[in-house]
Image 1 (spheres, one colour):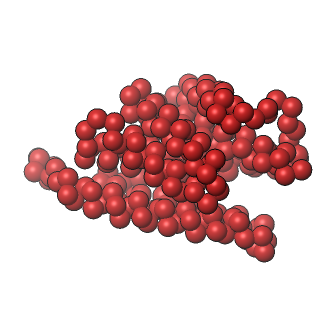
Image 2 (image 1 turned 90 degrees about the horizontal axis):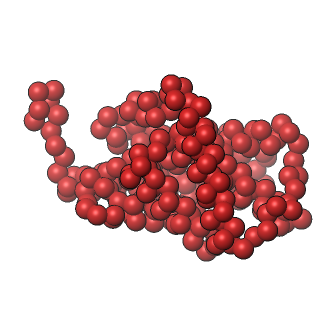
Length: 219
């Protein structure tokens, strides 16, 4: 152990933590998706349940992470806020064109079928809650721990695969897109050290785009 009492973690213990953590958050994600897809739940109660699920994931991350959730404060600091916003938007643009190429959707003629308050709330929720929580979980904790326990690109592949698993209830096309986007975001995080703030912004904007597309398709 070091001077501050820190002891290196064995790979066996690290994999046990990764497994328990992954099963826990995937279970919460599936529960949250089941709630979202339940049309009988009133919207105000649905929003409360959504917040509860995402805060539960952050709480579990806090428990399992050796350095605790405080380690991510620097990632979401306002020091480089403008730079992170610009980088996040640029990443979203890249993902946007990847989405068009993979899916074949013609999105430029689509309309936003919601009021300005609803649209702004959707952006807030998708970026600050969904994007931030999922980036902390998959490109933060899981990518870091799996990469520390393995060699090569296995950390990127496994974290991307787990990211795809939590989207399985939305169908095969969503799983494929989630795998591709998860791989890109994980590579940006590990190899270029893109901040979680930028990744959360790109993630949230992409989710907002998919919501707009789904509304147009259903009309």
